[in-house]
Length: 215
Image (cartoon, rainbow, N blue to C red; front, side, top):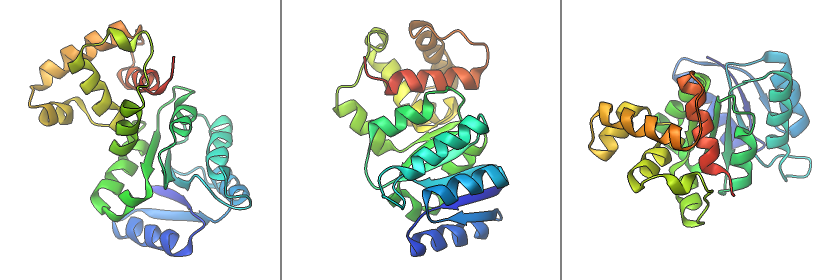
């Protein structure tokens, strides 16, 4: 994969570059500010980008804004966002276009090489990769909407794991259920959420977006 890495802390940026290249991927560009990030994304059109939320010049949300701006120019551009804290708003904004290819993970996950690379590959493939800590925060905040209230407890568990980016097979292993059982739950869940698109990947993204949205 061709990857852009945008992170203002040199040691973390250099560490991610070394890790990514050790797994056989190519880092085509790095960036340390919001403007540099947007320029690199539009110039290189990577297979996936790793972007810190807070970057210079103001260290507020320049990285996120660069990612959103790039996806406006390059719809579906895969982006894995790194954050030190769980921010529900960021997760919702990233998924708002329903195009997929989005991940939101905490920086500490970078220290687990397999987890980090797995998230990168899922996002590059057009899926989602939400950090379990993000999902836990959303659940504890009581975030819900009327359609989500129609889901059974089991369906909500399946949706939460889907938001992490797990496949039906992986969800089945986590919940000790067969893959066919998970398929039945997801079909029922899509129906209750009013998601009828025939594209399975797109349906999963829309379901995750419904999960992250407030009423």
